[in-house]
Length: 426
Ligand code: FES
Ligand SMILES: [Fe+2]
Image (cartoon, rainbow, N blue to C red):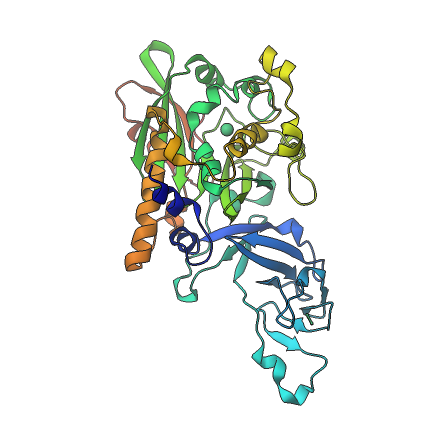
């Protein structure tokens, strides 16, 4: 990859081609539970290189506005969320959920001064325990997000998020790289409460040379990884990727299905969002507790969503566990196994120095689609794929198919999210 291609893909601040691309979608920005009640404390957020503050006002309306007061730049995070607006703690200027200044206490009301003051603000919407933001031009706002995890009843779904200290793309590329599972996560397949026991695990562990086939979908890609099963059949793990940063892990047995969004906070940090849901039943108490405890794709974090295992403590790597094979890398937990290695690449991976192989085909095609879409948006204003709710109604699939059957044909309707229909899983 050329240096300028890498730059194109990793920079997402205002005015950059990838930054503009991300600004054509609804992106997850907060968990609903971070703003649990009217007039609760405000929350600082960073997304696509922009710093903002979010609050829920007295009427329960959500606001997401520029973090800094228009007067002399104080952070509104320290402000008072009261009486239908957020008030700067320095001189009392007050703003509503749209960023409109409601009051400048030092000025006469008749002057109308406050009407001329408005903070930048973005529309937000709440769906599936997530607050989503749209940061693009108002006239190009897409329909509301329709991902299946966000539309099933709340008892069937769980979402968490964690800070990842590297660029979004190297994190996202881990989500579509099914070949590392047979190595990095091999220990977890046998003992993680949200993974163990599935028949598919044996195929996963038994064949460390998966063959990748990638086909385009309307919203992105379907990435099929084929491993040997019995009698000349193939075990297929099919990962959908929907532009720009949604990935879904193929299911295992009747375990809930899971996946991620990798949303840039700035060019050197991203928020890894991890969801789990079951299409047709409530999560059990045991499953939900395992998710809260940081099992499966979830991770234990501090109050700032930074994982307790992090680069400052070498992710609590345990060399005995590495040696015994309980954990292939010695780091505990699937999410931190991924994050530790992706952060170890440095804040922004230098893709001019890598040597790709055939199992990287999904990654290669995803990069091409992203570059193409970013360039076409910049040059012609062409809106990118993945904005249409129909394109978001995807599912991952794990299935055994006869050799010779193309995976997309073999999986068929199972690749589509259908209310009331269980996942296709081995
Ligand atoms: S800096 Fe916010 S009111 Fe003065
Ligand atoms: Fe992984």
